[in-house]
Amino acid sequence: MLALPSTNSLSPLPLLSTRQNPNPRQASFRAQSPLSPSRISASCHSHLQTERGLEFDTGDTFFRHESATGRDLAVLAASLYKKCTGRLRVLDAMCGCGVRSLRYLAEADADFVVANDANDDYRSLIVGNMSSVQEKEGRWVVESNDANRLMTECYLRRDFFDLIDVDSFGSDSTFLRSAFSCLKLGGLLYLTSTDGYSSGGHRPHHSLAAYGAYVRPMPYSNEIGLRMLIGGAVREASVLGYHVTPLFSYYSYHGPVFRVMLQVNRGKLPDNRYYEFISYCSLCGDSLSYSWDKLSKMRCSCSDGKGSSSLVVSGPLWVGPLHCASYITDMLRMAEQQEWIGNGTGSDLQKLLLLMLDESDLRLPVGYIKLDEVASRAKINSPPLRIMMGALQKEGYAVSRSHIASNAFKTNSSMATCIRIAKGLQQQ
Ligand SMILES: C[S@@+](CC[C@H](N)C(=O)[O-])C[C@H]1O[C@@H](n2cnc3c(N)ncnc32)[C@H](O)[C@@H]1O
Ligand SMILES: [Zn+2]
Image (cartoon, rainbow, N blue to C red; front, side, top):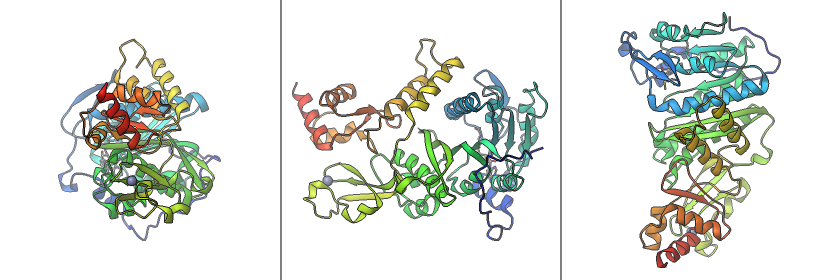
């Protein structure tokens, strides 16, 4: 049922090494699941939920109501893809109760969805939830397999997908290679990480192993989490001769959860553009990014051109835009078509997309500046965010809010300028 040949795939690809992992289903399922296998029981309790008007049962599966926005964003991207290409085959690799699969079918008009979860006990619950979509025969199938094994089998069958959703716990870097292998050219890969310790710089050797990035504590660690996830995908894609473009990146403090929607295409990034190192100077508060050929020149201008012990360096990470502005505009239009926004109430989804649009300004560098840091360096009380942003804009700097931190802003001005402006505002 899964075998639909495609000539438009991201192949040829090296296969996963089965020698390293003789029983991938068991091994990676254990590694990913918060429950030990002996504690995983059948979904015997019914917990009915409604999301965007669709009813489904979450049973005893892992389900977070707070992830609804992450699902909304995915459905908008899927709907745009269907509208643009006229087709949509989805692999929901870690579907839990199957809510995303259901939403891809019902709201994004997917032609075909594979709803997979390694926990076999969820199968009947997922089937029950998917059964509410009855229009056409054979539009969906439920699998109970390890995601890596399933995606590798799809690749071997030349069964390729337009959108692959990997909603894992922890770091999902182990699924990158197999996900790329069964994605169509131009297809979408929706990745999740819940690894807040790594993005916070508390496990640099773990982030190095998982994403190839040595991450140290930085004041905008949650943005670093998104950049680490994209950077990991950039690295894995380039091994295979592909490159990824982030369409949107979304951080949510519930968890925390880092999500990125990537479009995957053939061809490497020219000169590893946007795959660089980031420095933060604890002395002056400035951040800079360094390309690979400038690594030996890492120093902050506040230390007179000398190497400085005040520099904290992380990388390599994605240092390019977190979102594609024109894509976010299309998502806003699609959300309006779905009647999720635009009724004059200014929904949270609308506010989020508008923030993402502001953040997409290509003049804005990596990171954000917390108002508290400006206030503490200037030894004054924090000025109101809007007034501070207005003053920076008046001086010709690019500035936006950050969807990640509410009391922070992104700007291409230096910290010294922010301190001067904040002090000036205090005296008015
Ligand atoms: C975060 S939950 C999924 C939530 C769901 N996508 C949603 O939006 O409600 C992660 C799921 O992955 C499943 N899982 C864990 N390891 C897996 C693996 N290696 N392969 C496939 N599924 C796995 C778990 O059983 C769990 O249901
Ligand atoms: Zn400095």
